[in-house]
Amino acid sequence: MIDAIHSLSREGGVRVSAVSARLGITRPSVTPLIGGLEQLGAVEKQADTNDKRVVWVSLTALGGNTMIFIYLATTVFWRSDLSS
Image (cartoon, rainbow, N blue to C red; front, side, top):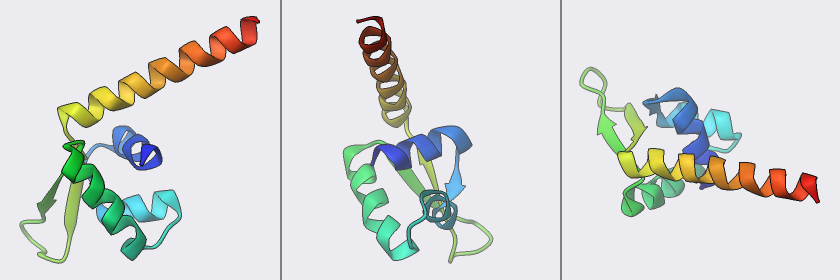
């Protein structure tokens, strides 16, 4: 899930197919992943107004804050690990 959140944080609103391509997994595999993130409130999905087959996914405020937390926690971990 972290890879999916990271992908969305770098690109903003993207098509589900773009998320699957970026993560290197099939679209049927990414669908439940995005569904889980949606249930957690980390992402929101929206149908394309021009093409009903297209679904856009974007981070919510919670998803963005989660990404910031992950980045900060990783930075602190690596800095403390390298200074030891």
